[in-house]
Length: 133
Image 1 (spheres, rainbow, N blue to C red):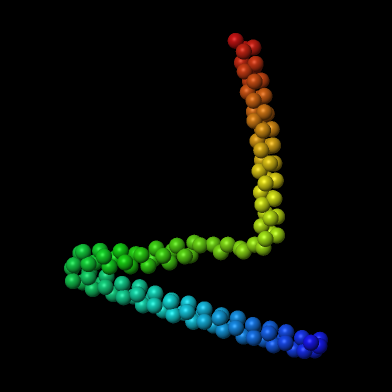
Image 2 (tube, rainbow, N blue to C red):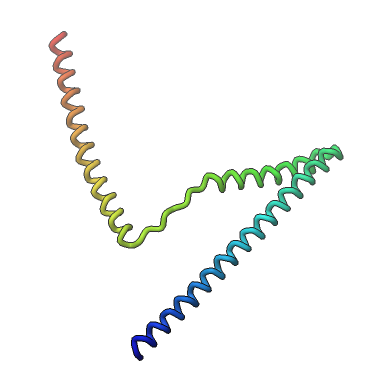
């Protein structure tokens, strides 16, 4: 195959891939929009059920509708608190693991240092207190 033919094939492949990616992106957006509309419709239906049950004076149905309505609010609040986790490459993961190991080693050294220091301070205090008596 000539260089030109390879370049043309590669360009065609990239175009196809780009089209596929755009198509999948549109499908995801449509699906998200459809799900949001369905969820909103279900929430509104639950709110209407709750109001109708309250108007009828039916306590059991009102409580059931209220719990269903509260469930929508709880899930909305839970989604707001979620944090997106960054995807790391293998190299970044290795680097992060090494950093953690090094940090743990440093922490161990410093904790030992401060334990020894605290013991010395305590021993000095004991000596001082024995002299006073």
